[in-house]
Image (cartoon, rainbow, N blue to C red; front, side):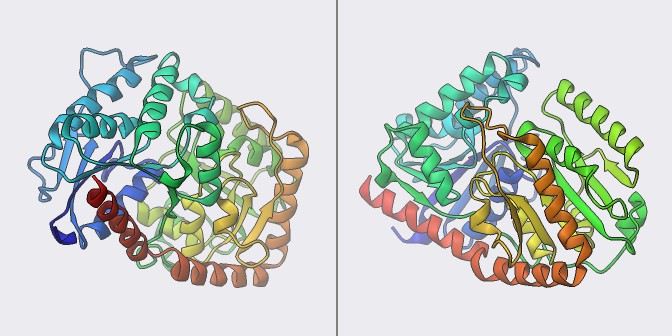
Amino acid sequence: MSRRDLVACLLTREYPPEVYGGAGVHVEYLARDLARLVDARVHCWGADRSADSDPAVTGYQPWDQLPKSGFGPALGAMSVNLAMAAAVEGADVVHSHTWYANFGGHLAKLVHGIPHVATVHSLEPMRPWKAEQLGGGYAVSSFCERTALEAADGVVAVSGEMRNDILACYPAIDPARVRVIHNGIDTTQYAPDPNTDVLARYGIDPGMPTVVFVGRITRQKGLVHLLDAALQIDATAQLVLCAGAPDTLEIGAEIAAHVTRVQATRGNVLWIDQMLSKPEVIQILSHATVFVCPSIYEPLGIVNLEAMACETAVVATHTGGIPEVVADGATGLLVPFTSTLDARRDPVDPVRFARDIAERVNTLVADRLRAAEMGRAGRRRAIEHFGWGAIASQVAGLYEELVRLA
């Protein structure tokens, strides 16, 4: 079989236009570049795609008999996985992304006798705060992930640190089956945008130093720690928070109250509480002095790559795969991080963590020439090391290897 004839089905929760996180961005670009190498087909959550112009994409909805809250969404994920597993008959390999689709890949392996590749973007044991969102469904998500990863023919880690976490969480997995293939970035799309129409739309002053956060409202992204740091960040800098899609109503309310307190005390804080379009994010990043990623858990941190590609200096937590992306002192500044020994991974000293974030942000706000040079170095690094074409080639090579061994 030639590589071009190999049929690969990608299973994912997120796919355009329904993308809300890094895993969805990953699958979007991976599928595009894989389509140049193999017969790539996408099975995703979402509306019926039969009328779409792309026949290689199929959408699925969870069973409507299931509850919409509590444990219901986790069971809904399993219902989608059943439908996906049935639909990929005839594929040569199936490739799942996140626990929302991992079990579908596992079932496809069983019923069709084909290799299953699973890319790990995060790990359920490393995100115990998900219990707030899923309730009893967290046990279901953990079961789906463990079952699928332990039986997968190939496991892809998006960073070297993620590979270490996979093997620590699931020691039953043979290390030989786990390989590192990084996330990538499309530097033709993610590139500096000199326009200012988006800034005007949201009330961002392009003439002021600007500190930007982009991310979902979830414990993982560490927004609460940035808000703690905000009172120590130079008040002449705009703090722009592009933060939406809270995991729960409770965390959404918690962040809203925290933002209100910071706005009342510090001022110069703009909260855009919605998920912005890609062009909007690119323009906001392009005009930022500093992008801040205060995550307490980040397998790679694709948003840092997005900021770097837009020529923006990065201040980010020294955790997970972030140090594999952000070159400390060259493309940004890393914030020391020591987590608690429990699964929550909170900072041992949250006061010091917030102070260290503010200190590094202030360093770059005070030296905008250095920040600009870091931004230019970041774009060079994104282009040279994280292009999607090379990443898709590695993935296609893994497919070929596993199909030959099957």
